[in-house]
Amino acid sequence: MQQDNTAAWDCYRPALALVETLRGQIEHSDIRSSLFTTWQPVYMAASLTCVELGRPTEALDVAERARARFLTC
Image (spheres, one colour):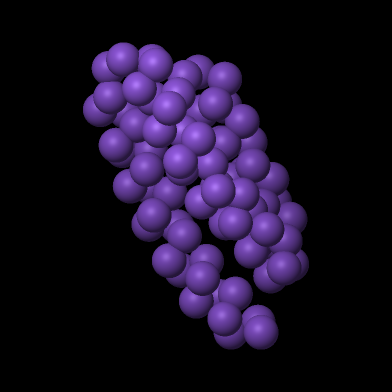
């Protein structure tokens, strides 16, 4: 299970980076907000994966980034 979570985290990191890059290129806040509802599960799953890996600081960082992105939509 640990190995699966490690592999998942290795996939989530670049996925989150891509989401944030794409989000930064979208000028209209209504579109950013709409897309965030699609991307939010990625943040949530990444955060939970960090918890399962025993990485609470990284889990909190991902959750905080999701919160900040949602509030600035």
